[in-house]
Length: 480
Ligand SMILES: NC(=O)C1=CN([C@@H]2O[C@H](COP(=O)(O)OP(=O)(O)OC[C@H]3O[C@@H](n4cnc5c(N)ncnc54)[C@H](O)[C@@H]3O)[C@@H](O)[C@H]2O)C=CC1
Ligand SMILES: O=C(O)[C@H]1O[C@H](OP(=O)(O)OP(=O)(O)OC[C@H]2O[C@@H](n3ccc(=O)[nH]c3=O)[C@H](O)[C@@H]2O)[C@H](O)[C@@H](O)[C@@H]1O
Image (cartoon, rainbow, N blue to C red; front, side, top):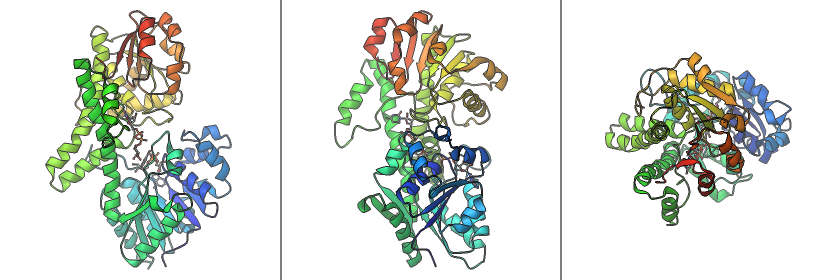
C-alpha cells in the first residue's frame, strides 16, 4: 500500500537544497524522522560537525535549525541503502547539471545522478514507497523514473511526485518558512492522490493549506523551469536596458524604480548587475531551450536562449569596460575583486559572474586579487580551472585561449583581508553585493591605491556621491 501517513523520510543529496530543506522539515515536524544521505563523505562529515559554523552550506539561520533538530529527528549519513530501506517517502535532491559531453552537450540536463538514485531505490526497496522529485528536472522525467523503478519486478508499488524547490540561496531558511507556494504534482489515479495527500500533510505542519497547490506531474515539472526562466528574463531585460542607459545618460536604478511601481510589473528582480549567476538559472533555461528544440519549437527555443545570450553579453560588457577604461590593457595590472560568490549571503560560487569576468581579464594577463568573506582560495582556483575545461561552445561573447592552472595560481591571489587585497590596486571591481563592502573605509582604500583610482561597481551598491568626492574614478552599471 502506498503510505498515507509519513513518519520516516529519506533525502538523497545533502547539497544546497537537500540540506536546508530537510533541516526545516525536521524542525517543523518533530514527529517525522528525517535522514539526509549523500555519497560525499566529506560533506556528510561537515553536516555532522559539532561546530555549526563548519556546515558545508552557508545560509543565514541554518545553523540554528540544524542545531535544534540534528540528533533529535534529523540525521546525516552516507548509508544510502539503509535510509532508502527505512523511509516511506524518499526525496531526490541530487544535482542535475548541464551535460558537458555527448548528445545535448552544453544544453540538456545531465540526469545520470537522478537515474542512479532511481536504480538504487529500485534495487533496495522492499516496501511500497513515495518518491519525490526535488531536483529540477526536464518535463516528463517522472515517467523515466517510473520506468526504472518498475523495472525491478518485486511487486512493489512506487508513486512518483514532483515537488520542485523554489528557495533562493542566501534566504533559504526564510523562503522555506514562508514559501510563496508549495507545488506538488502527481498522478490523478487513487494511489497518486494518496501520495499527494501524504506530502501535503507534511508541509501543512507549517505552510498554510491554501499555499500548497497540487497539479498534474508534467505541469509541476514545467512550472519550475518556467519560474526560473521568467525570473532570469527580468534580470536580462533590465540588464539590456543598462547598456542603453550607459549610452544615453539615463540611470538604470531610476528606470527600474519607475517601472517597478507599476503593480503589473512589480519591483522585485529588477536590480541591474554584472549578470546573474548561480547553479540554476542558466542551466534551467538551457534545459528549456533543449526541450523546445526537441519538440520542434525553434522560435520558442530562440526566445528563451536570448536570456542567456544577453547574460553572457552583460558579463563581457563589464570585463570589457574595465579593460577599456584602464587604457585598453590590464596586463600586469592589479585588479581587485570584491566578492566571488554568485550573490551575497552564500558560499556558493557556481556560475558566478566573477568567474567569467576574471577569465576575460586573465586572457589579457591581469593580476587578480580577490576578497570574499565566505569563499576559499581553493574554491576560486578550482572554479577558474573548471571553466577552462568546460566552456559552453555557445558562449562566444569573447575570444579566449585556455589558461593553465599554473598561470591561474600565479595570477590569481585570494586574500583574507579586504584592505590588503585593495592596496596598490589599479582598479577595484565589485562582483558580489556583500553588505560589508558598503561599510569599508573608502578614504583609506583610496589613499593606498594607484591613481587614477578606478572602481567598477558591478552591483551598484557603493555610495556614488561619497566615492566620487573622495576622488575615485567610479563606473557603475547602467549609469552614464
Ligand atoms: N541550489 C539551489 O538553490 C536550488 C537547486 N535546485 C535544484 O535542486 C537540485 C540539487 O541542487 P543543489 O542542492 O544545489 O546541488 P548540490 O550539488 O549542492 O547537491 C547535490 C548532492 O547530491 C549528491 N549526490 C549525487 N548523486 C548521488 C547519489 N546517487 N547518491 C547520494 N548522493 C548523491 C552529491 O554528492 C551532492 O552533494 C538540482 O536539480 C537543482 O537544480 C532547486 C532549487 C534551488
Ligand atoms: O532553482 C533555483 O536554483 C533557484 O534559483 C533562484 O535562486 P538563486 O539562484 O539561489 O538566487 P537569486 O536570488 O534568484 O539570484 C540569482 C542571480 O541573479 C542575480 N540577480 C538577482 C536579482 C536581481 O534583481 N538582479 C540580479 O542580478 C543574483 O545576484 C544572482 O547572481 C530563484 O530565485 C529560486 O526561486 C530558485 O529556486
